Amino acid sequence: MHVEDLLRLESLDLTLLWGGPPLLAREISGVTATDLEDPGRFLQRGEIVLSGLVWWSAADEEGTADRFVAALRDAGAAALLAGEETHGTVPEVLVDACRRHGIALFSVPVHTSFRAITDTVYLRQWGDLSRRPAADPYALPENVRGELSRLLADGADPDTLLARAVDRLGTPPCYVLSATGRTIARTPGAPALSAAEAAGRLKAALRVDPDASPYGQWFLHLPGEVEVPPRMLHEIAEVFAQYRQGVLRREAAGCSAAAELLGLLGLDAPGSGPGSGSGSGSGSGSRSVAVAAVAAALRACGLPEHGPYTVVEVSLGAAGGDAAEALGEVLRHLAGHRSVMGSLAGGRAAAVIATDSGSPEDVVPALKELWPTLHACDEAVLPYGGISTTAVTPAELNGALVQARYALTAAERAGSANLTAIDDLTTLDALLAGVPTDVRTAFGIHALGPLADATNPSHRMLLETLDTFLAHNGSWARTAEALHLHVNTVHYRIQRVELLTGRDLARLDHKLDLKAALLCR
Image 1 (cartoon, rainbow, N blue to C red):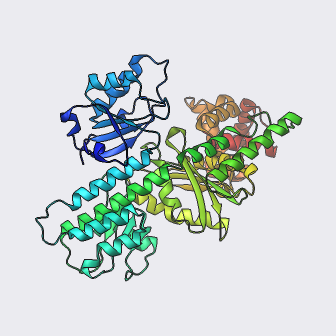
Image 2 (spheres, helix red, strand yellow):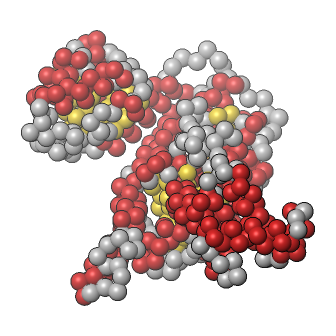
Image 3 (cartoon, rainbow, N blue to C red):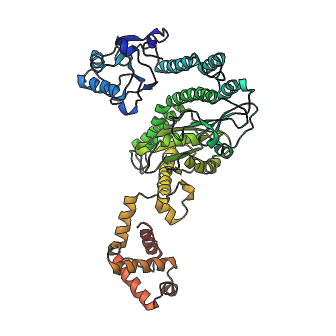
């Protein structure tokens, strides 16, 4: 499909504001919708860019529009489609900027949605493919291509698409599988596969969308001994690449509601707002307003206003990556649960899971069972996760997010690819693992006093004695035996520890303080 084809689509009702024949002849590779002031890093060469111009205001200087269009030019964008809804018209400074940088510019009327443009372009691209001459006689027939195109446009389910695509082969057993072994589609004769069974077959399957991330990838798997020309398999895979793009676009439409919900949970933290503490009348009112806002946000996300809920937070460690896509793929395995998910600062992602059937206690074991499969999607990246206890009401969701974040920190400190539930933190060591590193370090330094100076050999010796003494429950004899010392020497060293730290190791609370300090080193 070429840029000039957009003008021939009467249903879109686009108006060309600037662009000569060479620009209109450019081929369209895809579509990106953005309202970032500098979208360059998110664009692919040949894409048309849809923008509502939210980033521009009448008070802006010409430079703002110039920088935006220059970013499109540098990224190799094919054209800019600017919406009229925000400002009533497309600003003249934007027309001038497109003229300077050689970017074709169209105006999009209020009655034409960006989704209509996106769907039209992708469906037209598939239609173009179906009309190309086929040198391979075994490729999908033109009538099958046309039918699949219509099924895509009508929103057919993936099972129907797959059955029709392989019908010419006698409808053999065939699957479309996700990167974690989730069955997206299967033909009527294909037996059901567990996630583990399906994940084991991915190496023999064809990738549906080579540009997808390791967590968002789909696979076409034909397990039988049916002779299928490679070209036909690739054409079927392309059908599901188009279907997958439609799924992603629909999911993106709910991102703003998810962001609002997670924003409310993150900002309305205990002790951080006017409703914290013992509370006056106004504080109680503020808290009521906040809970009402969370309930409204839950409704907007399609979740029930009443629990139970579970909150999960995920990161992909130092290597980074799309934590939201990884978490989203795992959540799709949870039958009987609805969820809403969004990205957070620092490359993390979080989700609120509501239980429609079954039990909320099913969530933790299900996620832990899936975690190794998630890690296998990209073994160069370590996925970490934290899971809260069950929140019964919307008012408890904020605390659940705090719990999930704490459990995530503990998982990251534990290393490896780790998923930690708050219920797993049953020891002092596990509890302290969730404390931020800077806080742990500060506590250790202040609790140990001069002993925290690891460069002093005498202090290192005293720390070893203290650690052994506490490990042997304060037994002088067993500590002396473990360190091959006389008991009097142990007494002397422990007295030195008490003097330097200001603690009395005959007291249980002081023993716990120093044990925690040692764990925080």
